[in-house]
Image 1 (tube, helix red, strand yellow):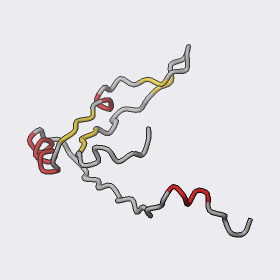
Image 2 (image 1 turned 120 degrees about the horizontal axis):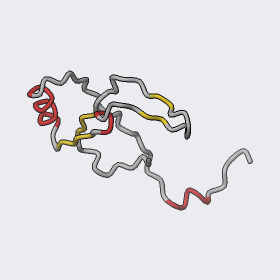
Image 3 (image 1 turned 180 degrees about the horizontal axis):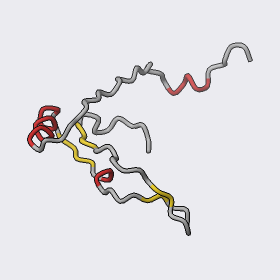
Image 4 (image 1 turned 135 degrees about the horizontal axis):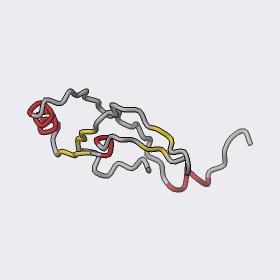
Length: 85
């Protein structure tokens, strides 16, 4: 997965796994009997996501993403001589 910022304004509802995973003996694949960990629902607004989980009685924890602080640079800075070399 890449750390792009496209569609960063969406709110997601993801489910925590309640059962542990197991390793399949023949091929060594990881498996689980729970399918909820594959579900990821997205909402346009935070209020819509909260209303959905409260209406269905789903316990939730609200996590806010940390905003990335980026320093704007130009392409030419890649070719500047670095000090100390």
